[in-house]
Amino acid sequence: MIRLFVAIPLPPDLRQRLALMGGGIPGAKWVAPENLHLTLRFIGEVDEGQMADIDTALLGVVAPRFDLTLAGIGHWETKGKATALWAGVEKSPELLHLHDRVEAALVRAGLPPEPRKFAPHVTLARLKKPPADRVGDFLRGHGLFRAPPVAVEEFALYSSTLTAAGPLYREEAFYPLSPNALTGQ
Image (cartoon, rainbow, N blue to C red; front, side, top):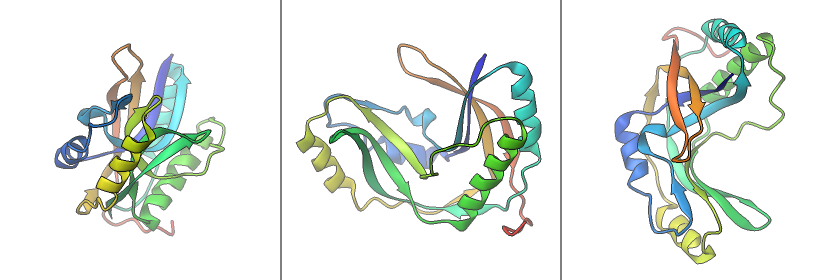
């Protein structure tokens, strides 16, 4: 079995800029710079035969290249406690189109539809019982974060191996976006 997800890789300079925000919150497990990405769809564990079907389906995704802008910092919470910090993504019809194309391809490959609404973000840290005041300070200190637009020319299929030190991600395949594709396709 192999654990998979589909994501947009981020350029090294943007990953480094995001990683430099890390720190100052006890109980935070910051995502390593090399692991920062924008998830389009978490797949979970599949066997190698289904992985081949997924790869074939993703090869058929047609979507245009586009620019993506990360802006704003936020957090997820459960029962009033912050559980993760993330960088937001400006609205992008092209990103939503790509997500929808990936989702349709995965359903055609035999995966069940994703029940959760797509909320594009880049996870910066996972939190375990952080002091609320430190989370608030982080959000206020970085709330105006905005990165220059980055060109999205491909997306990737990643495998994820869970270890005691944190997950290890590996690019399994890359899928180019078209310079000529239209979002209405």
